[in-house]
Length: 168
Image (tube, rainbow, N blue to C red; front, side, top):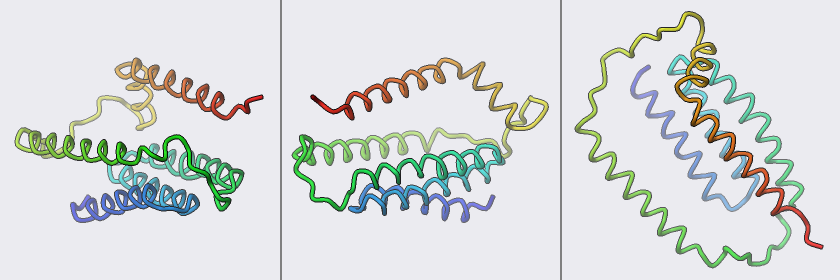
């Protein structure tokens, strides 16, 4: 893939993510997130990972965004909101964002001199398509991170249920 096309798609993805975070309207934030998800799908296509690109569009840009929009319409974002318990911690969020930006810049500065990328990507040893390759890697080499992610999602679901439960 041409390096210019990669940078254009990457810039669109970063701008979509920034627009999602900085938008004041929740519906606009959801639309910016869809732009970001489609940009990531195009990046997957550029890496010859067609299955991941299709899953990215169908699952995330399709199903998950429909759920987000249902939640947004159920919460009625145009209604006046009162100050929540985290509204006074904007300065902390800004400080943590600057710390993360400085850390990322330091890692990029340290790592750029030591990266030796091969001219061509290494050949995949699996016979078959990339679905088989993803499954083989996911359930062999990356089994522990996969299980940790599933437990993290379970904890997030339980936490969201507890937070959404009405207090009597």
